Amino acid sequence: MTQLSHDTALPSQRLPVYRAQTLVVSDGANLGDSLSFSEELVPDDIYTLSAHAEQESLSLRTNIEGEHFVASDSSLGTMGARVFLDCVATFMPPSGDTIEVLVLVEVDEDGGVVDIYGAPLAPLTPKTDYALVGFDRDSAATRLAQLACVSFTAGTRITLASGEQRLIQEVQVGDRVLTRDAGPQPVRWIGHSVQRASGEFAPIVITAGTLNNTDDLRVSPDHRLFIYQREDRLGVGRSELLIKARHLVNDTTVYVQEGGFVDYYQIMFGTHQIIFAEGISAETMQIDTRTQSVLPPDVKDQVNVSGGDGRGTPQSQFEVHESLLKRPDAAALLKRASSK
Image (cartoon, rainbow, N blue to C red; front, side, top):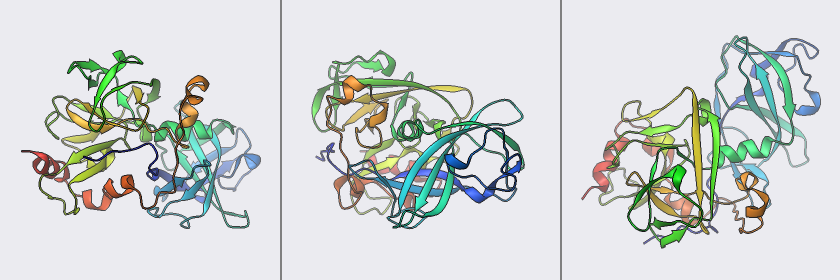
């Protein structure tokens, strides 16, 4: 039986981004300039997303010091190049809502700027005017951490050590939860946040029965599910798999639920664990250099923050690459592969 330890390397973190040159000031002090780092941003400038702008995928890995680098599976950037979290820029479209954009800066070995990316935390629309309301240099790490935190939504039933199915919002610190690899384990911390269910914060719904789950399971997009294959139907070459929820989306049995707000809950143990949610084996929050900023100070002082370089570790070996799941029947294949 596989033990997923807190000291294994971190999975890469995927961010859908726009290249800076696709978001340009159409009116204001920086007229004609593209999105830049905080020192060059001017509030009240109006930005317009190019009609031909396409979101691309930037994948980051994080080391034990909390430094970010372009991951090997990234379709953007130079592998291994340093990436700085510059700020969170807040924009306002004509509708009056606000949209946050995480500004990231890739640099070369000499510290020179190679490229700038904007990762919107809610969808941006081409040929729409966005007024820069402001920017915050201190919240960038926290927003990235919130994206990295694997979360269950309110209403998810968690299996306790006693066999009781308890709603995640009713689980308390100290409750003993059944884990796949370590038996009953006490909860160390429960986190809760309310996010707009849009873009990267929109939950993924795995409908009842899709993976032999008893009811619909709603999780954050990068939440990884643990699948034990009795038959290797995907051709992965191993029986134990970690699969991100977002990679199973087929718009029928697994879909993105946009709209309104979502209550996300994070559950943490002494080490990274696999627990049972709606009958599905799913990972818990991993305390590492990406996620530690969401912890309150008293909890952060009591846990061992782990990190890694993303190479040659058990977790990276178990995670299934997205390319093997780009098929509408992936969820159905996994259900059959894991059934008795």
